[in-house]
Amino acid sequence: MARIYQINVSNGGVPKRPIDVATVSELGIEGDAHNDQRSHGGPERALCVYSIEHIKELQAEGHPVAPGTMGENVTTEGIDLSGVVPGDRFQLGQDVIVEVTRYTTPCVKISGSFSEGHFNRVSSQTNPGWSRFYVRVLVGGKIRTGDLIRSVVDSK
Image (cartoon, rainbow, N blue to C red; front, side):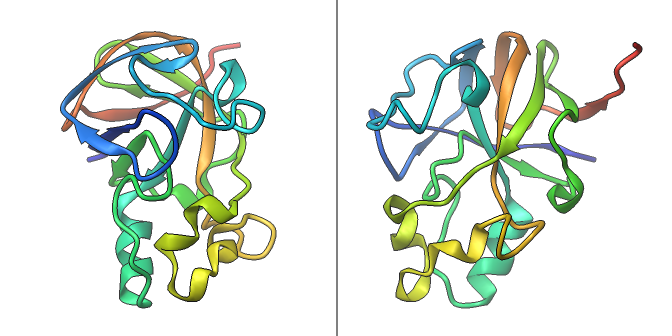
């Protein structure tokens, strides 16, 4: 069963720190900020998402990564993110519905999460299936650590 493993926010930059409950709107999580607003945030990049499974695999490779250190707002558990593509939709908890907009482009700001600074380890171009991804928020609301995550099939 897929669930929210951790919710992460910061005053800008990384690492993002865990919180238990968040209010999500079309611009992301209330109280979360971005130092580089040209590259992060906005309606098409409202939330950054990554999985605890990928984080654990990266740790096993020797990388000092942890939930929130790569700037993800929502750390998932129980979803194979390697198969997620833009256009996929998910319901987070009871209220929030999001749609994947694109894979994130890793940058030097997350290099501390990787041995020898090799942040391209999570690039969709060099390592397909390992990228974090951005989502737009279609329906806002509250999310909580432990909330279920469900795939949403568009009825169009």
